[in-house]
Amino acid sequence: MSHQTPATDRPLTTALAEAAGTASHAPSVHNTQPWRWKVLPDSLELRVVRDRQLTATDPEGRLLAISCGTALHHARVALAAEGWTPVVERLPDPAQPDLLARLTGFRHTGADPDAMHMVQCMQVRHTDRRPVSEEPVPAAALSEIDRAATREGVNLQVLDDDQKLQLATAAQHAAAVAAEDPQLREELAYWTSRAGTGAGLPPEVLPEQAPRTTVPARDFGRPGSLPVGPGHDRAAAYGILWGAEDEPDSWLRAGEGLSAAWLTATRLGVSLVPLSGVVEVEGTRQVLRQLLSGLGFPYIALRLGIADPTHAGPPHTPRLDTAQTVDTSEVRDQLS
Ligand SMILES: Cc1cc2nc3c(=O)[nH]c(=O)nc-3n(C[C@H](O)[C@H](O)[C@H](O)COP(=O)(O)O)c2cc1C
Image 1 (cartoon, helix red, strand yellow):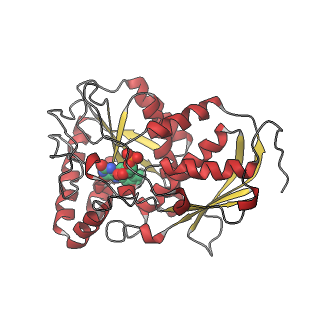
Image 2 (image 1 turned 30 degrees about the vertical axis):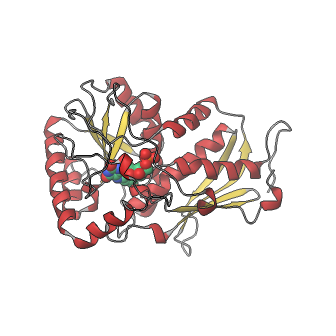
């Protein structure tokens, strides 16, 4: 395949390897990072890693594909920052369902300053599970976050007060189901005891006690060491990311939309926390579907708020070594 490389820029293959590495900043359910990139001379492939699927919590692979979608969006933005625009083929080969995306046909379109800013946002974005401050999220910020998701083909419905109470009830029910199921408890215990491996959730990012909020946050089954303070979620906005289909390629796009929404929220100083417990349980997923008036399928719920500005938030959650998520074996001699 032909591609033009301006003399001043790095070769495409180097940009592909770097973009795949940058994508390790992407958020994933329980920090499972269930993806592996293959760097080829002029294309990039994204595959799911089934070993890191939450088989009890997420048997259909909805959260798995959403997680891989966030990595796909991160890589696309990192490439745009370097001036590279690919053709993105999602689930390109029915015979290889684990091949989630192939990025090919690169054109050099000039470095995109907005994408460069988003790459900086990737480096600071994180999940802050503390209660939010009393400051409401400005309506203009919510609209901008909504537009970012919409550009990726995903809708964001912001809930009114009544719907927020319905979400709270659904989240309580989902938490009770999860607490009673030994397999779900075991899976959660595994991913919250992976210290030193670069995957899973260390105690520093988990609240030391359950925050007193209307919509309960996920119960990770063990206390962490993150001080939560007296805050609430009164000023938080809640939303549902949704779309017209409930299939693997729409889950992948949901992840791209989640990443776009989250990076935009980060740029605007808005804290975003996904609430996936409510989509993991069939019954509560149906409740969310009713909240959408049956118009489409819920992918994930979100809490949006302004973080407490007076206390330090959690540290960054560790990541796997790039060697575990990026395969450069076919291009090693081309990387500078
Ligand atoms: C699909 C998906 C589902 C998630 N569900 C939850 C959740 O229910 N509760 C929560 O506190 N965090 C949730 N998260 C956040 C992840 O735990 C977090 O992204 C991961 O641990 C990496 O940490 P970081 O976001 O701080 O980089 C979710 C993230 C993704 C992508």
